[in-house]
Image (cartoon, rainbow, N blue to C red; front, top):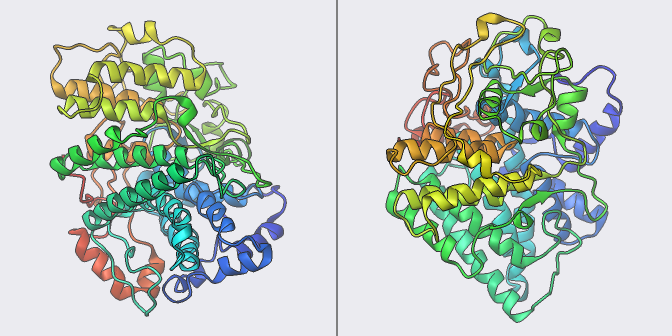
Length: 536
């Protein structure tokens, strides 16, 4: 496969695992319409773990991982890294796939942009459906289904925010064609599912304090339902804010309900949702392999601009100095790379280990979401300024960066200019943003929003998918445009990429269904068409 280094071991073993676990079975894509639990049933028979194995499968496919390094790493690379991680400005690609003309500079690569859809509908949704079928009519175990619903929403919310309409609500109903649902329909189903799950789990916890029936299978919270309720509220707040420009009334209603729930949203780093090794399952952080074994990713130019400009103490905790000069250098989005060696050693690697947990969501993000809500006049349990500043300190604590007091007080430093140490033509003479870290009560609301989102962007690293989504929603932070645009006019350089096209496999196996998706999208099936919530 095109990202592997030639000396990586274990390809035959990895290929065998792919067949068993359905991590790469795109040739059998029709199965999600006809027999969606085929591979997962094989897993259940092999391990005899009932519903438990399906939770592990769902959790390992939202940010794709695998117990065998390299296979999960390549899948993560295509689903997350060469998509949101790059489009958000967090990271820059250091390889020159397809002669340097690929999705990173808007020549959309089908073998890449279909993978996030495949993970959702070949691995997460079949596992969810297996849990649903096993628990139908079993009133005493609906708490297990409630947890599956929360994880499903976490997965599909990310997927719809990449593509828009999806063949979601009719999933698993059989038939040769599955129609797509509008994105607003999908979003409102998320809130219904989360509310129902929160109520079910809250009742279960009240009746069975301390009980953790899925302790042996849950890689996020070890089966602790109280933490999952808080996660569901936090996810509800995240998704509510997505509606701010598309349906402000619903956004406020759901956000206030999430914050006002008796369990509330994340408030400390101990609440964070982390995917990590547990119960005999070894989770390897794919970014370590992608950066150091594949040599395919480096720090992004935008991270260099903001972190060096702000003199951010988190910089060395997130990235390593370049080996050539000991300074921090990021790669700009959408450049043409003719010689890969020019974009490896002179640029900063990621400060990540194979054992670094994969963070689904953080408490810092919740404070910034609440700060934005307060800025909009919603009841978020604090002022915009206090929530903003607490968000910064919470992120500093998460990264082990000490006190944020001096950083929060800085009313001078701004984003820095960018210099490409290899090809000067990619340089940008000034930082795009002029906001400082320090909160100024007299600033216009839009300036304060930019300040909140810019700090949230830093704190959400390295989840580029969420950062790219929020950039599209708000326009912040100000991200350098691609240096080279190979979209043939389909994607605006200044507006930047808005979504991923539907997979080619859908046009081959579900042509009538994907036609409904294009119709519901309200525009052409390309990277320039805006999603439903993208209304600013």
